Length: 327
Length: 300
Image 1 (cartoon, rainbow over the protein chains, first blue to last red):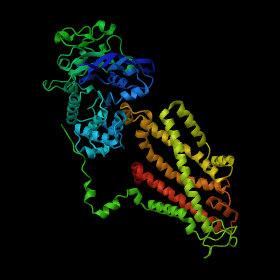
Image 2: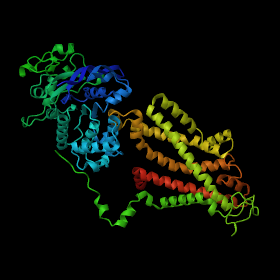
Image 3: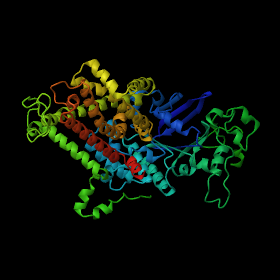
Image 4: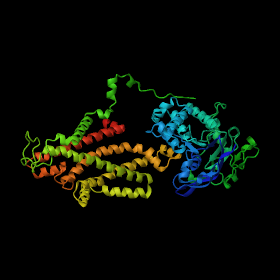
């Protein structure tokens, strides 16, 4: 398995009233082709900014450093035409709100074929044929008729399927799904997750799932990157991370989730709120909320390093490593 | 997996008998009496404009008759100060006013849409410059500015059209700018960019459909204004020149022969009916294309 996307030392600085602040701070991650990778974290932890930087669509005035190589091409260095050729064709995004992501007054057929014709240069009739196949792939009944319908004629779950189909229209190699199930109810969520999983396996498309929902992670992602305040907190195989987290923040996220086995046990929220962009604490950004914090946590900003005692690759940015004993 | 089926075809319509269904296909706003009146009157004027030489009893420029003769069975609308048949002149006036009004509204729409789209899409200093220019045109009352432009270019029908275009485009520019601005940051437009659409493609495929409805409504509502402005300029002697049979110029002639009411009344009525009918159609179009305002109007 080769690395499809290699993000190295990605830093995204956004202008605030107090000057530039890092929304993403020195993040590195790797995605192999055909692999589902998760990025987890609370709101404002830099997940979405990471994704947007891959598309060159950061807010006005944002500064980006580092690199994001897709097959050797640095996405961050692209501008204009080459960048547009990568968008959709190489990397595509499924956004959080399927209702908003589809144009309300264009037919599904138009929206599906538009990018396909542009990127793949196929004729209109061929594009329509492919579009119908694509709708069939995402399990939309009666694709021919759906092509002539408008987004308003579908339910939320169906629209998210269609949005996924639109994103897949030009056969991208990497699909970024930003909170793909947040706006959907639980029963529909499962279907979308299965769909993403199947697409990934059948079409060899790599998927980055961005979510705060570790349940979604466990269903889908092989590896998870946990971010906090723009920095990597912990990264490793999903199974390890969800059963034996090493970072207190990952632990906190898990404790805040209802768990079928722990019947009746109260949920434990993480105290406090994530820091705002202008007020990220020095040292480990998590230390003010961390139950295990020691004096050195406030002094030194931890780097993500291979966690001791783990066999596979497992990055951890917590030098005191209080959970190692527990694990 | 959870699959919700496509919404079924609306059963109420399918069950109705065929004739009823045909009638229902005319959208509700067009079935109101004012809409019917507007469409009928405009259609009538279009027919008149096309066939004026065949319908009109006489050559509108021929000075064959008694001067200022009152309406009679020979001359239904009377004759004017040069002994021309007023009915023929009113009918052939439609050939001047209707096509020119439509033409100038289309011109204003295109110019305004391009400028407004550029302002909304590029933003920044482009937006500032273009919109301040538009504000400059808004600062003057339309007819005054149109008079100034027409007078500067020379009294001629073509220049009157240009003058009206000059005063009309800013409203389109403003409207299109606001529509482009709101659509530019819409999630589906961002999504389209994420899939590799260029700025132009976004503008033409994703934003244009949002803007075309409101712009068409404005154009329809503006047609009445265009007719008024154009006739107004001709009335003031800045538009159509004698002997052209133009309604505004004919009303001016009537104003000089005040006791012979028929000279000015009939062209005036022509202007009135055309403007009213255009406004009815504009209102209807607005209701048809934007159901929200229609409902709001009905509720209030």
